[in-house]
Length: 230
Image (cartoon, rainbow, N blue to C red):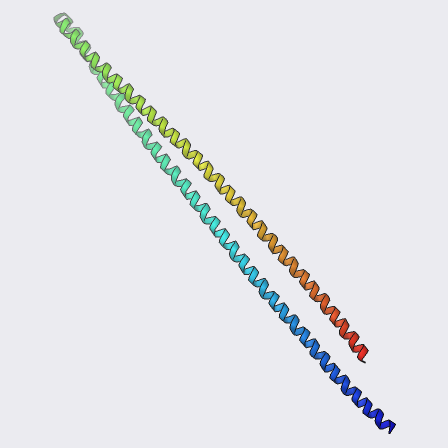
């Protein structure tokens, strides 16, 4: 009878042990499932953050490149326009100066011939030649004064255009400073984004370390529980 009781007790013990081991395996599977779920969720969150970071970085780089190219194109267009205007003004001034010079030379040559003829005819028509000479001299003086006035006007216009060029140079310098400022802001923003990324990576390693410590602790508990059960 004692032997049968011992057999029954042993059988009940083995059945309880199997049930306990089944429950322990179920707990281990449940814990592993939770860990896998947490790991998958962490991987999804990390991928989402990475995609958002890449998207923001690409948008920032693209916006910076577009703004920089637009400013460079604007500066180049302004330079070309100002150079064309300056060349046109120089060409017009040179043409006017050459025409005036040639006309004066021709007029002086004509005057010289007239004077030679007048000198030759001085004995015959001194009074008439003298009056004509005075009249022509007055006309040339008036023409010369007109040319001086036009030259002064052209000089004033050139000075005005030079001031406009200086203002455009100042605007170009301001735009260059603005480009450098935008570049600095973008570099600072990129630095902050990199720091955030490093913080996320550090947090990820910390979580991974915590998960490993928790897993080791649970394995030790399960080992202790199994040993105590046995």
